[in-house]
Length: 322
Image (cartoon, rainbow, N blue to C red; front, side, top):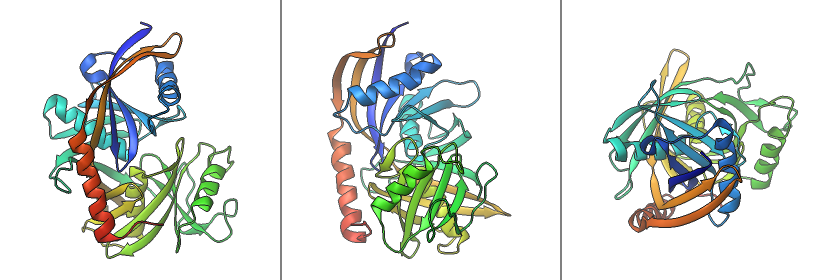
């Protein structure tokens, strides 16, 4: 099959923007190479939309459903916390299930539909049940990594995908981009790349995180980075275990609840899953072209509700970086 008639949902979690493809309902799928090609093609051919990645919801015999996530450059990610919440919302709309297990490259991940985090904000969770302070055998904990910086201390965290996280006193966006590019451009120390984040403690059990995302670049938010930073600040005793941590990013706010069992940390991340538009699309995988693209629904109420939420947290919390 060369022409695929697809229903797409344009959505975001904390303004981390995705195209969501529902193969669960349509019973369609792609050949492996088509997932990569479609992502690259849709990002370039729908350039009027901000797209950080493409989410695919599929059937599987091994869980309630399967999620595959491809970054805007076509690389496949192990996990995506913001995207997982959007997948959870779509799965709930299809099945009515408020609790589910989704197969990802990082394993089976549990999610739930929750009470609204703010009026009119559909809220879903993702549970990272095992957080490790290493990645592929490399362990740094609040350490200088000379290949990256002489004064910034990083920690390696594996939360299903890899993170390098550093506490800063002031956000230096060009420095974050420089670090992110260095780590993700054939870095011998991290040959498979890494997400890189800076964070500040901004209040009682409140943190602010900025992230350069592997395969994406500087992003408004990264769900796994916010969860990983929550685990790190718990390990550093900068926040309280068992109490919700409000984690802010340029794109919004989520809540993280950390736990600890022996040496293992867990993080339950809860936040918005906002649908913006629904489209019908015909994609020709042979010539790699979108041959038809039509908007069929605009979710104005969800868009307005999220803007109200973001205005509320910006005005009342004043935690956003300049």
